[in-house]
Length: 167
Image 1: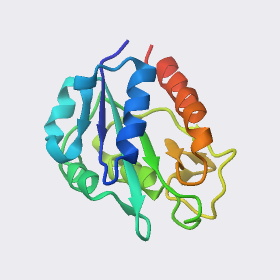
Image 2 (image 1 turned 180 degrees about the vertical axis):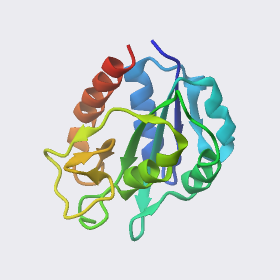
Image 3 (image 1 turned 180 degrees about the horizontal axis):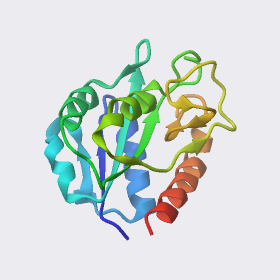
Image 4 (image 1 turned 135 degrees about the vertical axis):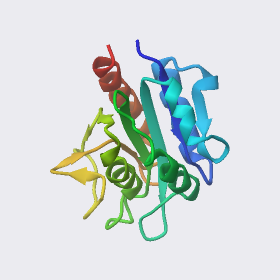
């Protein structure tokens, strides 16, 4: 399997928890799970697959640490890298649910990275999300506020998709 690095931005710890769940499902070593508040964007160079995760705040804003990390990533040539995205949000914020996933996707679009592991929007309830592109979520969206009972199954299903795409 390709070398996977997980890079997350967290404020309350929710995104860290999901990053750790993903790491367990994919057998990613804890040393390859990085808090972007303490990581240089250039650290992605050692990985074939980059998994990026952040929460959505306020009026659909990207988590602060991830926003800064993306500024650095945008200046890199990520050709040959596969990127998967996950995010935490709250479906009761129906106009901005998991916008962070879409924000990461759109901001890295010109880096030559290949995006992997989109996720079906079945079972989600929102009016609008920047993560929804043509009826498919461009990554994994987690709502531990309203639907914590769905988190484990969604993480497992998404990780299975990553495993298939990274063989």
